[in-house]
Structures are given as structure tokens and as C-alpha cells.
Image 1 (cartoon, each protein chain N blue to C red):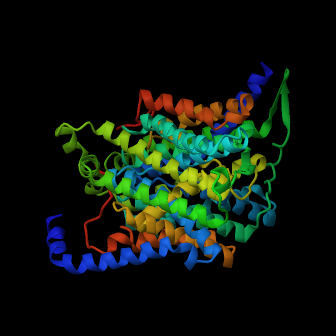
Image 2 (image 1 turned 60 degrees about the vertical axis):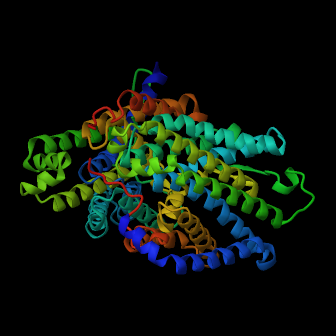
Image 3 (image 1 turned 90 degrees about the vertical axis):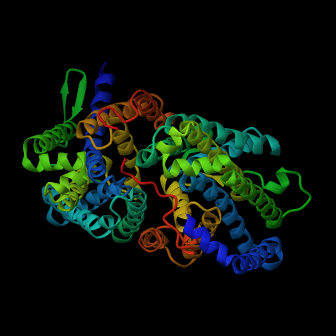
Length: 330
Length: 284
């Protein structure tokens, strides 16, 4: 750590100016999105931002706390399904759907958290995987509520459901952008707070944190629930953006795709997972337009990522020691 | 009563298949800490290879042998050339197996197309016999017996042979085992290949009833993971116990409350985890 901070200190004037310009360009592009991009690309960008929220929420667990959750799409899915059920079967109003979705996802993560917060490493991975598949099983088989394989379609469009006087892809885009910024700022505050540093401490050396008097179980639990809450926000956005929810958004492949976004982007950072989300969403959409074999290519992306950039692209900038990886030997 | 017996037999049939799949999964986890997402792909590839070879040779036995040998080879190669580079990095290994799972799924779709199929019954096992009111399909009974035989064989190898002793040493402490001169690398490759072959065998044994179809790779995989979690990761005995629990619960769940079938697995898993977080036979 010390060495990196020294290097960082030397490079500050150049780096911060460079960074400021980069952020400004990205910010301007995002704000001017509807002017710059065609509706197709605007839609894709909206999708990217939804998954950016989801990937960042997973990174709170995976990158900062060192808890590899392989069921994160399940929490995302619970919120999306809650919105779908409330808005179609119960014709609930906009805010009931939004709050209902977030509360449902957060509640489920609060229950799941009870069963996963005392396990670590691969055990955490396996159990979250199984819990995620339980959610998938419900979405697939609880046909009276979830529509089974057919999913639930006919979720009203966000702007009409919220009663906004505009239509088209632009309002959804701006709402998503606003939510992304709010969630991003909240998560950035979180990981830089004393709580966030405690999470990193648990990632690096839980035994030491315990002996320092931290309740590590509680920290892991709260971390899991917070990550679940942000995943639920993404789920609500997704339900409105997509207008349809189905079991494929909840299954193991979906969960591991979020995992890939974080790993590819760079665990232990917030920008990295957002970029990873962008890369994967764009790749999937562009690839599926050109070839039927995009699953093969996605598989190859997994393999190449792990072999080529195991610490994630964003972490390649600085030659830092591996972040977000826990030693397995106890 | 008839209903109960029939459902129990069906449950044991699922348990038998699950045991064939989960034993490889749990061994790979025990020796190498690999959470193998591609294990379902081995199960799928087994069924597909057996289908092709059986169609060519008209012999299910040849199909089964070819499936096991072929998939074992694939498993060995995946372990040797990809997973071993990432030794002791379980997350990277998991991602790698996920990548392979997608590659295998698409490759299978490319080679065999998307049409579902079933394997033929072995000669003489297609029928059923009646005992009083209860009608037993012979083949399901056969699968249960075969899985039991495999279980006994695995137990014998594990407990009674030098290979098994080395294996247990490697599960217990890979570094120390390596230090005493055991070739843990080779052992890992063999365990992974054997696990893959068992999964392929599971695909073949399930073939006449469950058949093969795109997506079958992720069908039994979550159940196999639940088996491993319940039984204790790395424990063969646990895989057996877990398979029976999950097979029966899943089957009765499907029969009694079809809407909540996966959800019914939640209960045993949560109970076991709450009482014994490491699973029935797992160690911390």
C-alpha cells in the first residue's frame, strides 16, 4: 500500500488533470446521450447502466468484502419479478411497484444473508449459487405467479406508469442515468466510509479484524443486505426497461455474467465493474447481431479474461497487488 | 401406499443419478477446491456422445464406454491445461469452468443440433414387474443398483487401496501430501477426469428416461451443488447421504407441490446449514 501511495503522490498533478478531462468527456457524453446516440444505442446504453448498478452492487461483496456471491442475479430477479407481479396482476401504482420491488429484493437478501454470512470463500460461492438457483426454481415453476418459462410480459413503460408527459427511450435513459449516479455516489461513499474500510479489513484478514473487536458476521451480513438492496434497484430498473421478466434473467448463467462483469472490469473498484458491465452488455448485443455462436464467444471471453487479466482491466492501470482475492488456505 | 412406494423409487432413481454426478463434484472440490460449473456439461456430453456412438454401433454398452472415455479425456485436458495454471485461486477456476460450460453448451448445440433425444433401454430392462399393486419399472431399479455398486467401488478404492490413501491425504492437506512424495498434480488430473467420467456415466444412465436436450447441463447441476452442500464439501459419504436426501425431497416436492419444486430443496439445505454449516460429513 505504502509504495503505491508514494507513486500516486508523484503522479498526482498529471493524473488528476487527465482524470478530470476523462470524467468530463464521459459525463458530457452521458448527459447528451439522446442527442449523440441513435435510439438503438441509447437503449443499449440504458441497459449498460442498469447492469452497471448491478455489477457495482456485487462488487461491494466480491471486491470489497471478499465474499464471492454467485447468486446475485437472484436478488436482482426478485425485485424485477416483484415489479412485474405488482404492475400486471395487481395494477399497482408506480411508487408501490418501485418501493415494493426494492423492499422485496432487500427482504430476500436479509433472509439469505442469515444463511451465508458465517461462511467464506468457496463455501460462500456454493451456497449463494444454490440460493440463487432456488430463486430461479421459483421463477421457473411457480407458474401461477411468475408465469413459468413464459415469464411476465406487459410491464408498463416507465414514463407512462410514472405519469410523465414524455415518451420514447429518452426518459427511461435519464431516469436510469440519475439512478446510476445516485447509486454510484452512495456506493462510493459507502466503500470510503469506516464501514467500507472495515469490509476491506475483513477481506484482507478477518481473524485480525475479529481480534480488534469488530463483529465480522454483522459486517458481512450488512454488506450482503446492502448489496442486495442495490441489486434490487437495478432489478426494478430492468423490469421497466425490458418490459418483461423471465427465468433466464435469474439463472446461474445470469449470476455468473454479473460475476464476469466485476472480474473483467476490476474487483475492488467501482468504476471497473461499471466498465465490465458495459463491455459484456455491448459484446452480447453486438455479437448476437452478427453470429449465432455468441455463447461460444462469451465462454471464450471468460477463459481469456481469467488467463489474460485476472485482476480486471481497471486494475491494470496500477500495478497493485491482487485486490478482491482472498487467500483460500486457512 | 402404492403411491408412496412408487414415488420413493422415483426419488431413489434421482438420488442415484445425483450421486453419480455429485461424487465427482465433491471429489474435485475436496482435492482441488474447484467449484466446477462445467460438471453439468460433462453430464450432458456423456449423454450426447453415447447417443452418437450408440446410433453407430447399435450397442449402448459401447456408447457408455465411449462417453466415459471421451469425457474423461476432455476433463483431464481441462484440468491439465487450464485449471492447473490457476491452482489455489478458486474464484478464477470457477470462472474458467463457467467459460467452459458455455463453450461446451454451444459446441454441443453446434455438433448435435437442438433436437431432444432419448437413449435406448439396455436389452431386457425396458419393462417393469408388478409386485402386488406396485409396478416397478425395471430400468429405474437397475440404475439404483448400478449407482449403489459405483458407490461401493468408490468406497473400496478410497478406503482400501494405496491410491485411495493418497487421495485422502491430498484431500486432507495437499501441501503435506505433496511433501511426502505424492504426485498431487497427477492425482488431481485423475480425480478430475474420473469425476468427469462419472458425470458422463450419469448422463448415459439417465439417457433412456431423461434423455438429452439443450440445457440439460444446468438442469441437474444446482441439485448436485445442493447435494454437495448438504453432504459436506469433499466427502463421498456426504455425497451419498446428500443425494438420497435431495433425490427424495426433490421428487416428493415435485409430486406434492409442483409449483415450489426447487423451493422444497431450500428447506433441507437451510436446516443442515443452520445446524452444521459444513454439511453432514464435511469438516471445517
